[in-house]
Image 1 (cartoon, one colour):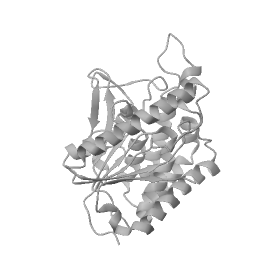
Image 2 (cartoon, rainbow, N blue to C red):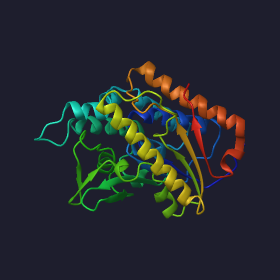
Image 3 (cartoon, rainbow, N blue to C red):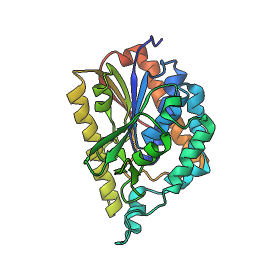
Length: 292
């Protein structure tokens, strides 16, 4: 159904929305779509991407599901970052939550895959973070995975910055939330991206500062992706899947809720694959996936 193709998969950032990304990945593998030739990930997309690069298969996706259903994931994603940041603002500190929360989640994933370095991965992985000193993306492709993943997921104000090679790093989503451009610059001719900041029309007026910032951030990051797509589609074939989530998506990290998010994304992606078949990947396009 889906013939051989050398595709680079790009996994965007979006915090707890990463559960929807897992569902899309599951549907792709279940349909027999060829595993990626390479993966580029930012923030939670880098976390998900590391597991898929370790085991680029349905089995690897099922391991990733277990990571999302773990206590460690609940500790990281149990509240909306903006609400936590604003409620915890203090003049004498730049981060509200300890880095250990994310570190434990990374270690949980590594305990399942058994892989701790870029070189051990079965598929090349590129992790995108933000170099605070240079004010531009920082790209990691070799060495230990943990520092790169910590840097890529260091949400400003929520988690502390990560020092690597004498430079401070923050979440990659600050400068490149869906790093299609990194894949194209690396020479990818076919890109399959899962972008997490797409949303439908939102008729409710934000009532709080976190809600207002959340909507603004969602619009900004989604239109950044759209701009990159339009600019780069003449150089590569780019197919983007966007699970639709509310701008204030505060995820209840109970097992049954996370499973329902993953399943809704899996079912929506599976429906699209059944409807379009291999034609889905023949032309550049952006596809929005309702989660019911």
